[in-house]
Image 1 (cartoon, one colour):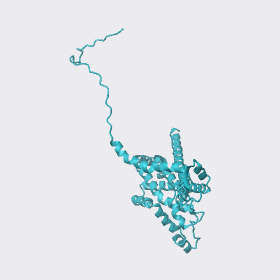
Image 2 (cartoon, one colour):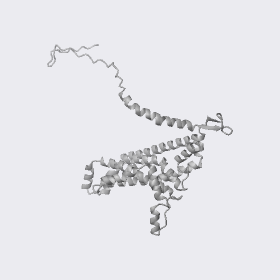
Image 3 (cartoon, helix red, strand yellow):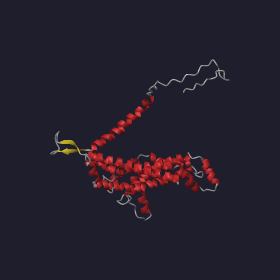
Image 4 (cartoon, one colour):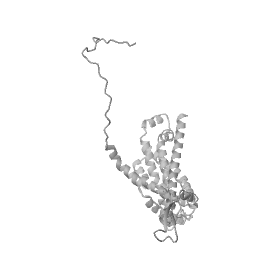
Length: 329
C-alpha cells in the first residue's frame, strides 16, 4: 500500500513558484594528474636509487658469488665467477679475525656510547640553565670538535698520544711520574674512544639543547614556585620531555660505533696494537682492496648492515615498549 503525502505549497516561508531542487549529479570526472610533486621528488628518488639502492643490491649479489682460479690464474679463462650461496657468510662467521673485531667494537661501544650521551646531556642541561654565563660561546666551543673531520682529529690526538712528541709525557717526566703509553695493547681502545668522544659530544649536545629550548618555560616557573631545585626540574621535567631526542642520539651513536673506521685506521701507523682487522670495517677494507676478495668483503658488509639495522630496531622497540608501559602504569 502506497501512502501519498501532499505538500502544502502555500505553507508559510515557502515560495509556491519555487521548483524542488534536483539531486546533485555524481562526480564522474576524474582528478587531473598533477606531475609537479613527482617532478620534485624525482631528483631525490634517482639519487637514492643510483647511490643507495643499486650499490646495496650489487653488494648483495657479490656476496653470493665467489671467484674460482684454475691453474696459476693466468689467462682469460683462468678466473671465473660462480654462485657460492651463503658460503661467504659462513666463512665470515667462522673467521676468528672477524669475531675478534666484532668483540672489540662491542667493548668500544660500551665505553663510548654511555659516556657520550651522559656528557652531552650534562652540557645541554648546563647551557639551558639561567645561571650559565657565556652560553653562546660555550655552545660553540663544545660543538666545534664535531666540525673537525675524523681523520684530522685522529692525527691531532695521535701526536698527543705518541710518546716521542706527546706533551703529556714531557709533563709526566718533569713531575717524575710514570710516562703514560695510551697506545699500548690494553689502553689503545680507550684512546680511540676518546677521539670519538671528543668529536661526537658536541653534535649530541646541540640536538638535546635544541629540544630543551622547545620546552615552555611556564613548566619551569611552576616547578620553581613549588620549591623544586634545578636538579629536580631537570630530572622531573626536562629529561622526560626530551626523551625522544635522547633516543635519537642513542641510535645515531650506536650506528656510528658499529661503523668505526677512520680513527683506528689513522692511528694504525703509530702503534703495533692496531691490526689491519681491528674493526669489522677495517677487515672489509683489507679483504676488498688488499686481498682483492670483494666477495668476502661484500658478505661482511651485509652482515654489518643487518646487525646495525637489527640493533637499532630492537633498541627502539624496547624503549617504545618501556615508555608505553610507563604511560599505562
